[in-house]
Structure formats: structure tokens, C-alpha cells
Image 1 (cartoon, helix red, strand yellow):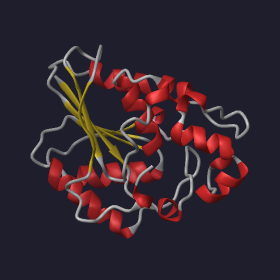
Image 2: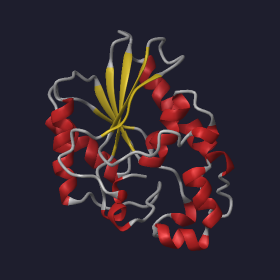
Image 3: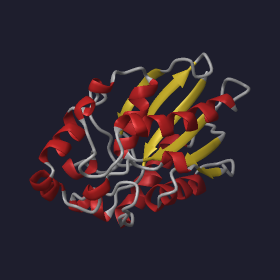
Image 4: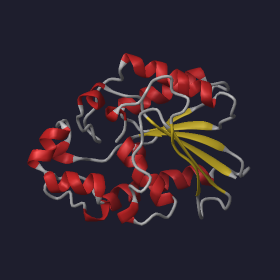
Length: 220
């Protein structure tokens, strides 16, 4: 079986401030995030991985490179443009509170009703568009696992990973939020025993290894 370990990037300044970053916005990791990546590495260290794949956005790439340096085996870190966050258009850089004032319908649908989300007004990316670009990246990773026993780490973003993972599990668009969101530096693990024809959820949003207590700014 092939196991995929999905990691959301470490917490950033904009996460702390409650701002949308999206595919074009970015902000640096907080100093405390490096401690949390160390916690993550300690949890993952006993496992053997084939490679780390990461979004090109700095917050994810920095997380991936820092994690790779703390894991054994000199793991290759592969940057894949398809793993970037949602393009959130006009919402990027805005505080959640301001988005709620200017784009209340879009914000509600994005967070609570994905099947109703229409990003036309904000000039952003839809859920089907995101899934269409991200899924092939995962298919390519699984296809290369000729042994059928590979383990891979994928570092990406909270909203994008929630949609991607649920789509891999066969979850309908309307129910993409059924397990809630994903915390910074969490691990969500799925596996396939049929080379990607189907996937099974092993653990959603695992943060038990973090030495910090989570607050509302940690999860999206």
C-alpha cells in the first residue's frame, strides 16, 4: 500500500493576524513554527519516506525544507506548482473580518458550503478548478511507487488540502468540510491499496505531537 502524509505548512504572521494568504499572498513563518516543525519531525522520524513534495509558496517550501533537514535519509524535496494554495483573488491579504464585510456570501460558502461557492466576484479559483489541478499531482506520486509500499510527505495549504484530500476520499463537494479544517503543521494520512483507484483515511488533522496548545488562529 502507498501511504500519503499531508502536512499543512507552519503558522505564519498572516495566519496569526487572521488574513487570507491564498496562491499569491505569503508571509514568513513565525519563530515558534520552527519548534512545531521539530515536533513534527520527531513524530515522523521513525518512519521511512521516499520523498517530500511541496507547494512552491515560501511558507510551504520553507516548512518542507526544514522538515527534510530533520529527517533521516537525505530525502529529496520536489517542488510542484500544482500543490499551491487556492487562488483567492481579491480576498488575498484581507483580514477575515474585512472579507466578512465585503464578501459575506463568498466567505460563508468557502468555509461552510463548498458546493455553493462562486468565486466570480472575487476573481478567484473554484473548488472544482482546484481539485482538477491538484489531483493529477497526487496521481503522479502514487504511480511512481512501483513497490506499492512507498510513503510520501506532501506539504501544502489548509484550504487546498482539505478539498484535495476529501476529493481523493470520494467525498461529495457539499461535504468537503465534514471533518473540519486543518491546523498548521498537522499530519493527515491516507492510503491506497489499488494504486490510486481509491483511498482510505487513516488519520485526519493529527496534532497530538505538537508541544503547543492550539487556538482558533491555527486552523482553517
